[in-house]
Length: 182
Image (cartoon, rainbow, N blue to C red; front, side, top):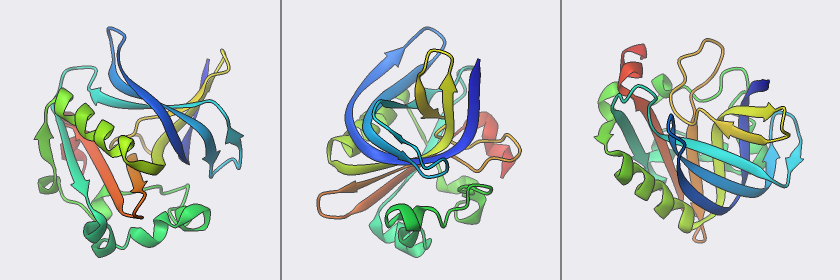
């Protein structure tokens, strides 16, 4: 049993490891504490699972946005803590189509993507994840699908960090089989 809901969470990354469980390659990020902006819950042990390879081996494409990009797309005001993040509605979530085009993305290798994420995490004072929150029968709580989500009724996933100089960075990703969905 796994209950999944659209989610917006933020917290501080404590550690991360690359995982390969045979069917999934992902970066597992442990966060503590984490604030779930939709349920209002605070979790002391929370895991973000960022897929770095698709289940069917399709190519991964990413766009990395910097402070100026986030200002240009008017995303920066939405990253100002709880009140700002709540401006990204739970019913709509992030929508890549509202500020990106398929040509915005560049293909990236699995290791290069993991290295990029690790670099941002190592300099982050806060981390924001958009995706699907899960609660399973073992008591595990986390977020996954931190990429374009083509399932009806969900916004797209995303990954934002803020460093000690208050600079914001964002990563958006999709797998090749999701490109046609724009």
